[in-house]
Structures are given as structure tokens and as C-alpha cells.
Length: 211
Picture 1: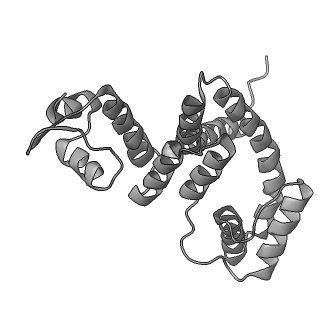
Picture 2: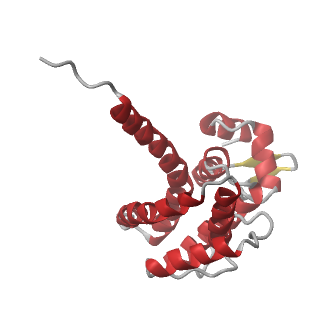
């Protein structure tokens, strides 16, 4: 198919497709003339994946390139792909806070749940910075909800892996890891807001009238 058809079928504008080609997110098509190329169904699938990562998942071009690189890695493994995707999703912007109380809270939290977490990781820095900010705005007790979050997320993570294990091939499983992590984070945030709204309505609703 020509680039115009690729655009029509994917819903991605031609200039954006050309941008993704320049950035290496989409492999080049088969050249049919100096100014023309032919694209396949594989290009269409990859373009839809790129769109999911960037437009819906909110990844930067650099992060999306890392995720796609993990999928294309000839030595790829499920565990390695998970690590790459998580690093791309939890991109560290700057250094973690120097708040020692927040650092200690995160260390205790991780130890309490028997997890392993490198202190130079984006996940560690994110937790430290979140708890530092909570302390700065006078919400020190926010740390108390982390254990409840952890228990809920353990079950969610098991469901994630159950879904990935339904993949018919390793390539499909790796793609599901990428899509599930990026889109799953967006979906989880939306579902959390929906559930919280329902819980708030339930708690604040007036009692039913007496019969």
C-alpha cells in the first residue's frame, strides 16, 4: 500500500507517518521509485502500535523507540522486555529528592513487601519524589496508603501476567507486555477515578427514608 492508504487505514496523518519514519519508529517501506515506497500489513500493525504508545500511552518519541527496540531485540526475553518498558514508562526527570525521611519510607515500604528495588531506578526516584512532595504540602500520612496500594497492585500484576501468558507466541507476549504496561497504566488511572467517584457517592449519599 502507498503512504496515503497507510494513513487512511491507520488514522495517522501522512506528515506524522513521515516523522515516525525519520525517528526510526517505523521501518522504511519497500522503495518503488526515488519518491515512492510500498508499505505492508506489518507496517500498518507497527504504526498502530506506535500510535498506541505515543498518543494514548503518552510516551515520548525516545521512550517509544526504547520500547520498540526491546520488541525487536534478537535476544529478547519476557523479563528483559518488562524491564525496558518499565524504564521507558517511568522516565526519571532529574534527580530524586534528598529528603532522607522520604528515602527511608521507600526503603521500609519495599522491604516490608519483600520486593527488590534499585535506588538508581526511576521507580525508586518516583516514589521518593512523591513522598517528598506529600511532606512538603503537609500530607505526611499519605505514606500510610502505600501498603493498601501495594496489596491491590499485586493482584493487578498477577492479572497482567495471566493475560500475557495467553499469547500464542513469544513475539505476541512481548508486544502484550508493552501494550499492557503503557495502556494498562492509563486504563488503571481511569478506572481508579471511576471507582473513587462511586465510593464517594456511596459514602456521601443521604440515607434512605424510613419506611
